[in-house]
Image 1 (cartoon, rainbow, N blue to C red):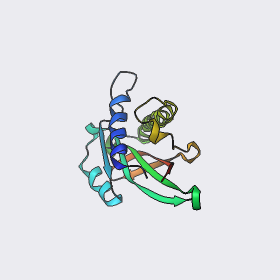
Image 2 (image 1 turned 120 degrees about the vertical axis):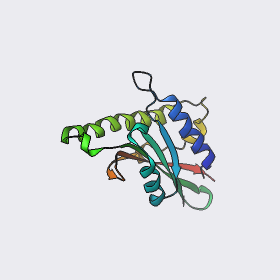
Image 3 (image 1 turned 135 degrees about the vertical axis):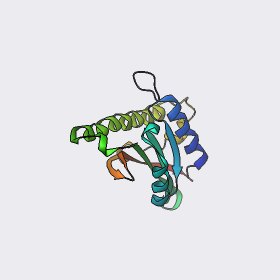
Image 4 (image 1 turned 60 degrees about the vertical axis):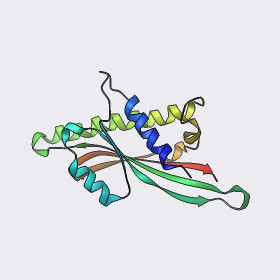
Length: 159
């Protein structure tokens, strides 16, 4: 089972390391929430100047396998969102929010894959469990005034 402190450390590290082409941070706000009601509260407190947010959901854990081949399935979710002032965007501008946050979501995913491959890195142990075929990216629309993407991943870890 993935320890929460390792996930929080990794999330902070990602926010510090991922930069755009101008050297600015891709994510200006990060947090971990427990459920959808807490996500709503956190998003209501955000303003567009905080954009872009990387918010993880407390993982879900399940057992899989049998007898001497039991593993934890760690199910992780990450929201990559921008607070949106709808009055400032026409239809094309609104679509551009998804273009920009999709770029940030893809950079986040490439970072996960890069860190999995980096066996000498700080987080190589935890990301060595990443199942690439589990990665799912879903659009998020008008979630408490925010738009962007939800990235879901699974990690299989030993007991």
